[in-house]
Length: 138
Image 1 (cartoon, rainbow, N blue to C red):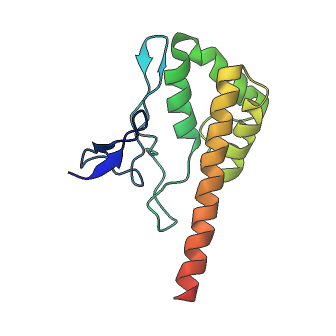
Image 2: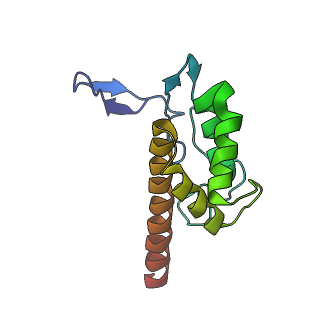
């Protein structure tokens, strides 16, 4: 079993073999008694940057925001879509960018999630560019 460092004690701690941080980051958050998914992998997006990290999609935002907001989600989602002038069925990058802009003026939880999703989009873009540069150099 691989060994990692314990955050709390700084002592080496066993890491489960199934936990591959690069392929599937494990995150567990709680809000209103519910658990967040243990993976933020996209349902619809296919990895296209050589690093096996899919670009986030509107479907990802829908899924996570539904889990964050629970029964309040339908109204929040409708307001986000109206603010972004979207139907919710879009799959293009521009639509996701418009949704991210709409999250900036939303409630604090949605706004924070929007910022985290924007970071994922930027990370994907930078990894894709880096992979392209490395491939062209080799």
